[in-house]
Image (cartoon, rainbow, N blue to C red):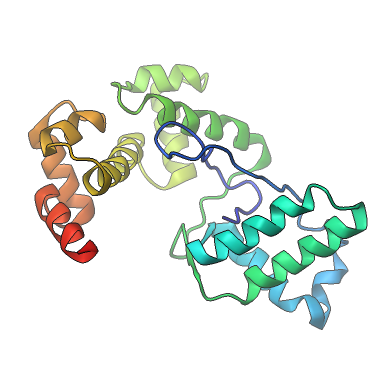
Length: 223
């Protein structure tokens, strides 16, 4: 993944992802100087960094090749690391094996001063989505009153906090439906919903089909 500056995000390694570890390279957009991105040689990488404002996820094949190069950077010299990193950026800039995470014209991008607060909220949801999360609880976490928090969260994310939590829970339910031999009722409660009817209704709103239909179509595709 390539995540632009001040783009809120959760960690990618926990008990729900089955990832044992993650490798992270952090860099400033102007780490080679501001003017270098205007040179013809850097135009593709410059365009890549612009796309990264919305978040980019790359395909599995590219993940394997680039992942190895990132791991190999650990033992390289300083110059070797820089050369390898530029080669990696060039590879990411030229591939078609990717998709934009935050599609559309709206970029979920915060100011620097908001970044820590919104990431704190996102990570709290990641760790507690199976539980009931009240507005009072999350507003207190952000050191805000409920009305102020609701306005703040809507301004930052372009959605209500309830919508955000429901989207997170539905995304988790998709993973369970595809990978676990659980009943749909079990998936409902394992995803943080405490009402089966509400789970079905919310699932249809986001996925445009029922949980049973999604599982059936997924299994047919895999076969």
